[in-house]
Length: 421
Ligand code: SAH
Ligand code: ZN
Ligand code: ZN
Ligand code: ZN
Ligand code: ZN
Image (cartoon, rainbow, N blue to C red; front, top):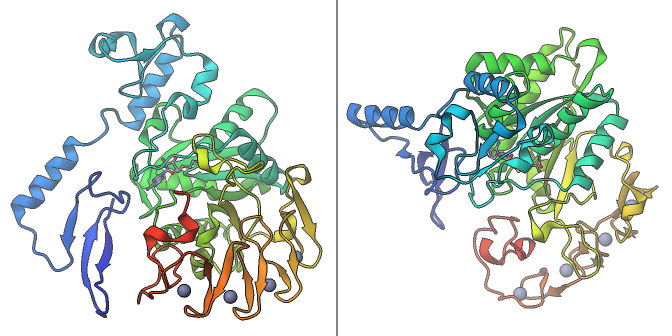
């Protein structure tokens, strides 16, 4: 889909030069598209680009993949193979072509119901950054939104939540539905066009064109009183402004489905993202608040739920629902603060001066009278920098704030919020 317009700024200069680059790939190695805003592009280069795009399309279309799936499930177990190298379900006629590839055999119905287990997570690539929910967190999210009365989930970049809903819906009496929007086209092998749209959340592009857009629009139309919530868990390296702009477009889609109009209501949303992006998210969505719940992942060793000494997950739920409605499990160490009217981590003490439960990471924070706010327990007030910071730091100030947290005094590479990555 469309590129994004970026600006290169050099220190001290007001205006930088503007250029277009790929919206989805944050690594030039994954996609090297680059064009100055004012650049003239020759006919030959345009033609070369089109040719490149044509030759880099997926081998099968979504429709073809759906038909293949229908044939696949008719096969006896012994003929059901999945090529691990091509990440593809194979029909017997294709075995030959993949003969020197690693494959799995006897693919069971259970495996087909959990593609996120079958497919390998695209975690090395900055582009996809697939971090899958631990079962506990996924189950928590699902129970939470059911308890809140939602019956439809727009799953944007949350394949594992989608698959949990899909597989429950096929088994028991379970009346929740989900539509998955994701850039990972491998999922088109397992879901129909009504269950999955190939989508880019950095530029709101539906690869399936108007038909896919219509599928999404229909899904957001709350018939029979089935309320919709959007749940998204974007790659953490993603640009918040690009994501916010797409999410606003999805919200607008929801608003337009209602003939009466939803007055001034917003589509309910859970945006799952690290806590140090709080101020960035709130810049774009002032109605959102951050919950203390720590979201855990399967394939992210550093982000596992902390017992003693282990690092805790920095990932939180941002939502435009009333915080007091988001009930967090006491057995996992959350309690209700009656003053703040929300559930907080048990270590998160209510600060009388700030008049709120101020900890962001679950540990007990301390109030600094000079900074007039609560800070991390490991920080101290530096009179040179005139703010609280790590004890070990160099007092040299950088003009521009840190790229990650926006604070002055350090660069992105040494940002305290990212010290574990
Ligand atoms: N925790 C989630 C997965 C989050 S990982 C779960 O378990 O369900 C981020 C997800 O966003 C991946 O599924 C990835 O494929 C998807 N993604 C990455 N870049 C994207 C983009 N530009 N547009 C849409 N989805 C994207
Ligand atoms: Zn409180
Ligand atoms: Zn305080
Ligand atoms: Zn201070
Ligand atoms: Zn200092």
